Length: 593
Image (tube, rainbow, N blue to C red; front, side, top):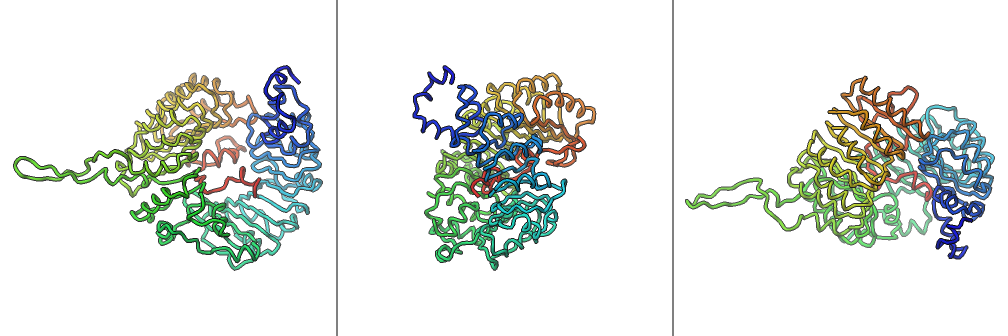
């Protein structure tokens, strides 16, 4: 025990309370705490280290460094999601030492169901397992009889046959499967009809028609397909008492929900709230939503739908809203372009169109004030609404001072000046994604001015037609707190590039883990020059991935270097255009599945 620990307030806490605190923090923070205060004896306490959580800890260089400090025989839960840079052999070695391990979450890592992996799993009584499969590696059908809950991510469904899955996991009760490319839905339909299953979640990120499973052993409480999201089905085997109290038709005193039902659009809430509503634990009038997604296709953009969405967001059920996805039409100001009568001295009258009528407050302000504790906002362009009518609504984003994530698509008529105020007021903003529909030079200017205030920024993605890379990087260097971990830049044309400035940026941000430049018109010589600079700094840490591409397709997962691909955790969270509202993130949600 160090002298600093003896003089700190930790030393005055009861030992039971201190152990309780340490058992609820992530493992990387725990290791840092014990290292600073020289109190490694806490790492031998079975209560403190029952759960090891290293999910997306990019600072971790090698997982073997924890095996010498932590009493691995006491570990019951291991979460290593997103540790893509650590070799499978090292992961298997540390898992072998955890003889009492019950929960293993190794999603988007080098572990899967190949022979060497299943051999390790079979020696431990794992009840809950999460892994990602790919086309490489031969799957060995070795029985894992203790696994009751499983998550698998499959590139194509023909990698796994339903019979093979049942052979490997004969005691499987709960299954969550993510499919990237659908070659057949037999794996889903088979398990829907399997009477031994108690819960099934299937997410299909491929074109597919709706299919109903209500006639099966399981009961479907969530069957939704939204734009910008994969098709998702949630089924569960409920008891007779639960089904007797369930409501297949959710009703509300608020007529706005009926309007949305008339247009047969997808429900805006996620599977968690859908389950509570289905079991009549709450009604649409008594529930407090945490996530609502109102991203709709063009037919749903009309006056009735917009007014219905406004009424829902102003209702008491949204006062605790944490995540919201809406389209620009919500910021529509019908008073922004009204006919204004002007009489002249000669008794002639005329009408001038598109004159802004000054108003004291924007109509959307009263809506946003209903959920000022919002932490995640996604705002997309609606092409059915005149842009100028929603221009002043973008400045209202700064009302949400507790924002952690902001994803905004900017139309040509918006210059992006609202970002300056947003980044100054929202000091907790950690993830920022800005997309431009077309070339927007003023947006470039305002992004450059705003980004220096982003002191909490960890993830930043910016997309525009033409960019001045030098100015953007120069202003990124002005951020005082160096927390930026992932940086993605996508453009058609690049005006200017300075190797010296790029080197300065990389040197000032050693914590940077993922950097991806996609520049369409970039010459091969320029690409090689930039990549050579990136390669020098990429070698500093095994988790670093620095890539520059002049690919033909935005978001293409393959990068120019042969035999190498962008890690799934970065591709899904930073490059792929997917709405994260009412769309569970398996890296965070599998623990509670």
